[in-house]
Structure formats: structure tokens, C-alpha cells
Length: 245
Image (cartoon, rainbow, N blue to C red; front, side):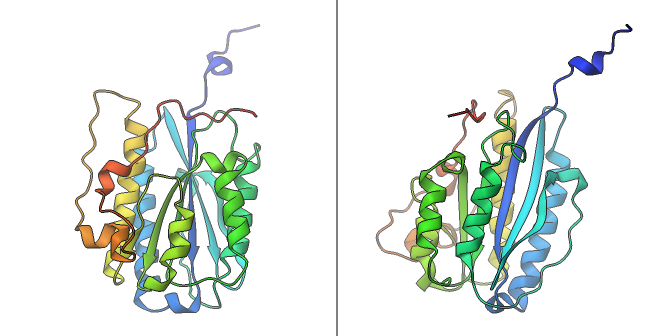
């Protein structure tokens, strides 16, 4: 039998990135327009970043009155973006159930993958019943290992919800005062992901974007949080592969 080197070639280690995007009616207008453009830019950057050593896998779950998979988790090179449209209410509960189910499925995210990055974006208070699914996501199973980032748009009253999502992550809540800040947050999220990938190469340095503290520190929406630079809260782990329990 002829030797076939491809049979012995390891596939690139996958880094899953999952967006949880609020597309309720309050996101209409400039917010949803800017959100669509920010995700498009993120995708373009990820396609340039993804390499033979690390394959970015990208997925999107949207939530309004219902939660849906907008883009199934797949290699970022294969993703074609279709714009989101704002409508309905804010069903974060079902979005948390859906993303946890996705992460727990080893057929979707194999054990060899890096721990996922999950990015939650919302602009208001969700329907009742979000607490238990969010707590289960944070504290149990494979989803508890995910790196979590979050941005609140405009409505300070929902800070408690968004900070609960970040509990124990070491990351701060980002606050977008208007639609123009949305792109800034997505740029930071992209660069954070870049750092996770390129930290595997010691000689590679990544320039992190600069932010004004009032946009990026949770103290803008609650007096209980101490100011912390967003750059210092990035979690990087060189041994991120999932382990069977």
C-alpha cells in the first residue's frame, strides 16, 4: 500500500467563537445597522487570522421573542453573513439553553478544541426566567470552561444581567453608550481572540486596541465594580483543550 502522508496529518486545532446577539425591537435603527457591520468586519478579520495551526470556528445565535441559530458553528472561511433585523422581545433564557446545548455536544465541539469564546451583546432587560439557564451555563459542564465577554448597549438598568453572565470570568462588562461604540467593542473582541491564537507563538506580539475607561469598565453602570484595564482582564491559557469528565 502506498504511503499517504495526509492520513497522518493532524487537523488544525479549532477555536470556537459564538456570538449571542440581541435582535429585539429596541435594537432597531442605528444599533442593528452598526451591529451588522461590526460582525462583518469581525468575520473579515477572523478569515485573515485563521491559520493552518488554529482554525477559527464561528457561530451566531440570535434572540428576540425566540432564540435561533443564525449561523451554525463552522469554519470561519465558509461563513457568509446575512444581515440581522430587529423585532420582538428579549428571550435570553432560550438563547442560554441553546448555546449550552451546542457547547455540550462533542460532535459540534470536539474535545481537542480550545475552550470556546462566547460573546453576549444586548441592550435591555430580558424576559423572566433567564437566571437558572445562565447559572447552569456558568457553573456546570463544558460550558463552564468557556471564556465569556459581554457588551451592554445604552440601557444601564440591565447591567445586573450582563454582569451575571461574566461572573467568575475575570472579564469586565463593556458599555456602549451609543451605536458608535459597538464597532469598538467588536474590534476589541477580535483582538482578544487574536491574542489567544498568537500566544501559542512566543515570538509574536499583538497590539491591543486602546479604549476610554468610561466605555469599557463596569463601574460606568454600577458603583460596585473597581476600575480595571480591559487589557489586563484577558484570559489566556496555553493548555485550553477540553478534557472529558
